[in-house]
Length: 416
Ligand code: EPZ
Image 1 (cartoon, helix red, strand yellow):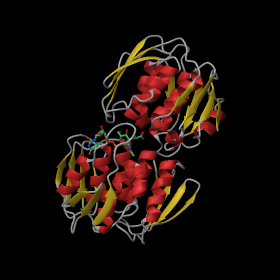
Image 2 (tube, helix red, strand yellow):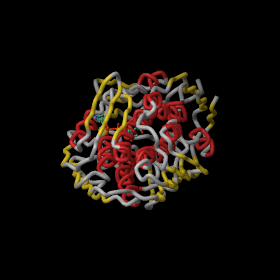
Image 3 (cartoon, protein in one colour):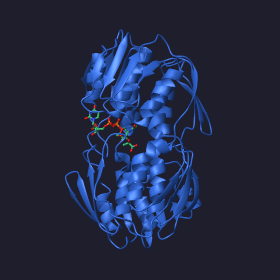
Image 4 (spheres, helix red, strand yellow):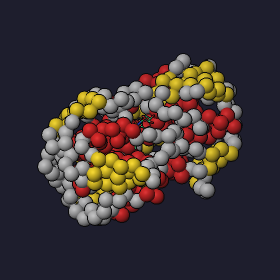
């Protein structure tokens, strides 16, 4: 399998421009099915998850062209209600195609996405909400068949502020009859991005970014151009790379507002961070400070997608830190791999206790999931000696040109 080979010990210095947000572009690409016309999306990251979504849209009949980070989708010729099973299993977030297909065709057949590396990933909140919008759902033989002669607005309370469920309701509600209200909605910036795309195409959605989103169903959406927000997790990952190598890097094309919790924790770890709205400079500390407690939680709390990266940093801090992962059931698969590099981490259920060690040493390790793989790269940048990280396909799902970008900042890393 493809792997990274990293020589540790180099300070990262330089400047990097951050790509568009993976977790924005996936729901927005699903939404392009609805307008039965053209969508031109800018600032699209060329990552594997994007390529999978492109394959799915092509297989259901859309015509797609890409020039650099600009993608044009023509959704006039959507000609099937079946979402390809193998691609859904490869990328579980394709479940948001349900809402989009229901708005476009009134029906969809999609396989159960199933669990993934970080937990069982149930979709009960999605299905319960869609039923409240008048969708008939049949689940059998690993498939979900949804039918709605007419989508009707409703008042929906989410038991948990699920990002995907919020997105599916917005995609199914945008053209539903009447008003849909989502209470306890997810507040992530990517939800706001989806609202902005849909409204630019003629939708009437209000409140994204707060716990209550109100949707007035419209008859149709029109062709639209839209630019994706920067990826806050990619930004946080490169910031952590500077922190773990006592480096000094400048990030361009970011939305500083979206990474306030990441900035706050990296400052607690001893980093100096200077920022304006769309750029920042981070200087890593000589001695990484332990952080008494980090608890992942839905936005604007500390993001679960940055948990593994922060853990790598804290393995070489000057004390004991505690991380509790409250969002996913099984998101500590990077712990045994970091331990192979000399880290001292104890996990009890969804809490990890990280006792800082003087240094990490290079080893052969394996990426088990997207962000866990990123944390192993970060650990390799700081470790003494050579680290080989296998199964980096996980990480290439969400990071564009990771090795190239790190080399441009002075890292010794190659992909073999
Ligand atoms: C989105 O996943 C992101 N993926 C994840 O990013 C991110 O970690 C997550 O939101 C939380 O921020 C995309 O946007 C493509 P959830 P999603 O529904 O929508 C439980 C990455 O690394 N839940 O908010 O699947 C679920 O099991 C990825 O970029 C239910 O119980 O997240 C989890 O414990 C990883 N029932 C919690 O809610 C449901 O019906 C959060 O899930 C749905 C979710």
